[in-house]
Image (cartoon, rainbow, N blue to C red; front, side, top):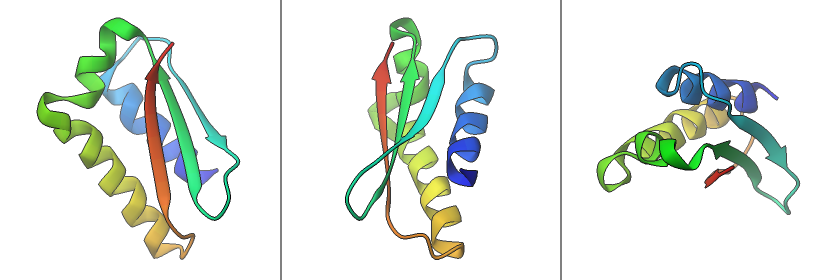
Length: 79
């Protein structure tokens, strides 16, 4: 759950005061983290050309790598 809490922290820092949901989804082999944000805030989380979303993925993947947890996928969707 450390990766979920890290992802939640990063997204909440981008969207203070907004209702978000971050949860781990069962998958074969990979760790999948589902991030749900309000539809009007999707552009903030994804960023221009996906740079912010890729940065979040890189940070969480690096944390997983240091703990030898395997590959992490982050899916960002709207509520």
